[in-house]
Length: 237
Image 1 (cartoon, one colour):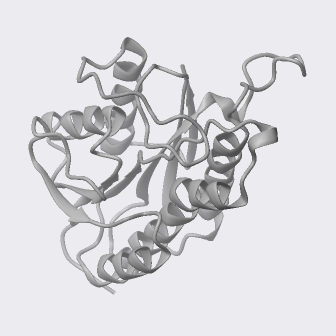
Image 2 (spheres, rainbow, N blue to C red):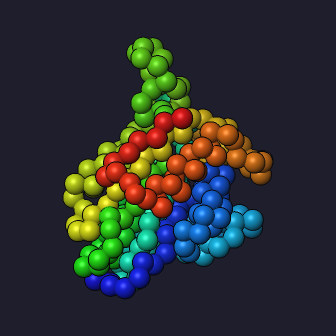
């Protein structure tokens, strides 16, 4: 149990285009220190973010990370923006790639969330703001069965859907002072992602400015962290 002023804002995926845009917005909004969790440091132009190296695909490293979070100061907020892509179609399905994708997109973030909640038990602060950057492939692109999914996203969509459901149910399980969850469902905005094999490698990072839809999503994230906020909110582009 850790009492005292809120600690850092935890952010996964800060080395990617989406996470870097979120980190910059958090710094500009004065939402406190951000700690970037991941294999790769944040982009050089992401100021105000401290780096905590961890491979989210490695369950042992995630367990060690979670123990450090629990023992640290009360977490201010959690933004789960890391994601592992998988462009394998049904005929290319690989349990190994699926397991890695599920570990990064879902189970690693569940472990980090549990540790962040534990760090706040017994504190007097309000509910922990939690943001999950998800994808609109979890809901389908139209109402028809034929167009419900996107070819090659079977594993990625399953992992993102698992993350959404796990964190949504965690709202009910969270110990006092509880948590509030914002799910951001982004469309494909053409930014690269680390990929699980099999499937083609992700395209090179172009370093360009965030797309307009990403800017709108980032505004929604910073507003949610700043509060007030509902227990559960879903943002769709």
